[in-house]
Length: 112
Length: 239
Image 1 (cartoon, rainbow over the protein chains, first blue to last red):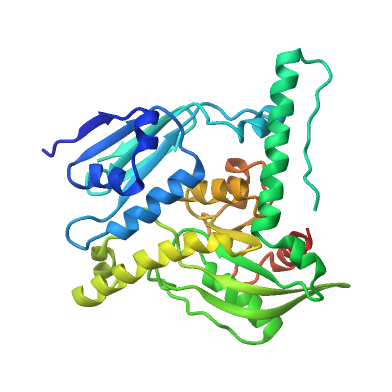
Image 2 (cartoon, each protein chain N blue to C red):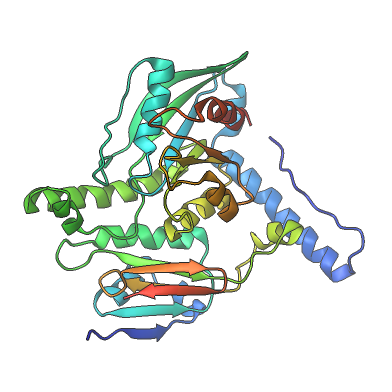
């Protein structure tokens, strides 16, 4: 049975690392990073870009990424939330280790 | 074109009011930054406004089929290849100056077909579709570049049609990430819930998952729902 390592990465630490450093963290090991924040859309996009840069046919196929958030706010509060970091957590894992992550409001399902 | 949605609730405490004021100021600056970045000021003074409409979504959602249908309907020729094999589009394809007419309304747009955005690309998936190992590896390599190009092109499009396969679960991280990026960059968009000709497809399901966005059910393959889609497309690029 394959091992999966879960690693907690504080958001402040995440911000100090480049997308390349983050992808390398999960590229070398069967690791899932747990970041205690919902990442901004542009942060997610940068991670996807970097993952694609590092895809190597036999060694690295990409990442799985998912955010778990609570029920979305409605009305004016939902609008205002766009301007601050949302509560939630983000999971980023090697696609080799995680086949699929389905995120729903409040929870996520990982297929390993 | 001026920033909208500025909120000044009347029954808040001083702290909340200051917070809201600060947020609104930040928002106005973000909008001004966007105006400058996207060259909207210069566009206001140009004689002809050309609008680039990007077709975004995950692989195999039907982006190329939709872009081709629009091109066929209004320019009488296709411009991008379609296939059931994922990542058929591996580079940006552009059809310039397509004039969309609906009733008394008319807009001129450039259609920008983009490669499907994915978080992982496994060459073995292409082998399962009948490609040789060498071809599969080459396609995977091109597909990764295609994803990067598609993300980078978000800086160049003026509006987006987000194409989602209505026969699949719409709540995927790729869809959420693309839509989040469109929102945060202030790019106007509509969602085309495609493939409604399929038995298990449901545009309603897509609307349920993304209730705050404009969702139009279509079949780019059969043409179902396209009349209403064109109305919404004209509205989108006229904003």
